[in-house]
Image (cartoon, rainbow, N blue to C red; front, top):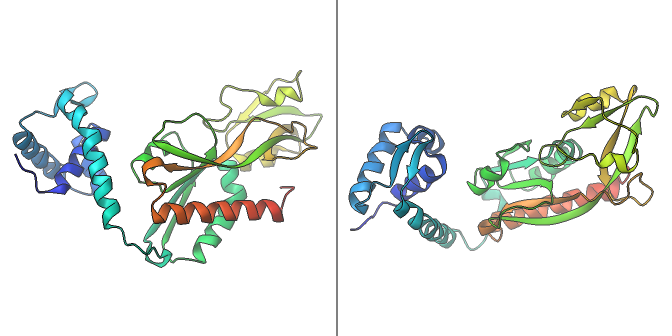
Length: 272
């Protein structure tokens, strides 16, 4: 058995992630018939069905599960060996970053400005969503800016700064809780400062919450401040990268740039 087409192996690895020829075709920008043809060729060359159909889509065989990590590692090593020794941000085509919404509003514009100083690449900065972690692992997103938390070892996290909680708005108004996905969905940290309050309004949009502050109160996440209502909030911000790519020239460049930009913004505007 001999496989000479690395593109076929890439199709296999994407099928392992999507469990669908249709979704793999869309992701790779190819036709579904092409994906099916490649899968048929792989089945013949490897002498294994690789996937069986189920209610959830394509389910990998035990053989497919056994070869996936080895193929993934081999292709990553090949990609790394083909990267130029000297990295230049001028040669970057696209930069994609996912940021938790409050952080996006605070740091999004300075980050874009800092990137634009060094490259003409297409910049895509979006809100962090429930699929952002998987998109980082699939290398559709270069970097995430979110909250430091328990994550799989396939993701690398670098802490940037500690956070505090600041009660703001109309102190006589009802309490509005801002929901940040993956951060405080099931926790009421504000009750350490306001133990008798229960939220009666829930929002997940920072701009809307800002418009309500003349009649509601809320807790805002800020960089650590000793005089804050809750100095040690127990929430830290972090840069998130795919662990196997964190030492690639592009990852090092973009993570250093974002870190420098965030810390500089905090130094210039510590009260925001």
